[in-house]
Image (cartoon, rainbow, N blue to C red; front, side, top):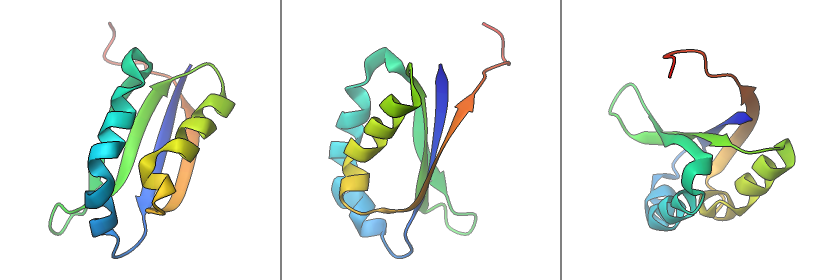
Length: 94
């Protein structure tokens, strides 16, 4: 089942993001084919990273919550808010 994880960074926490980015990317890669897509959201003004969107193919919401809790960004206190939603891919068709 696909889940979308939407994270919003705390204000003035870009350095926290940058400091923890290598560990975060390695963490994402550790999910292998369970990682459907991932990337930062960007501000309209200056394209500065200000959040994250991650789409995971996991069996349960509990697994997604565990993913979120163990993300190096979360452990570093980067996020102001995190939401998890089930998602159904419709297009493009495979």
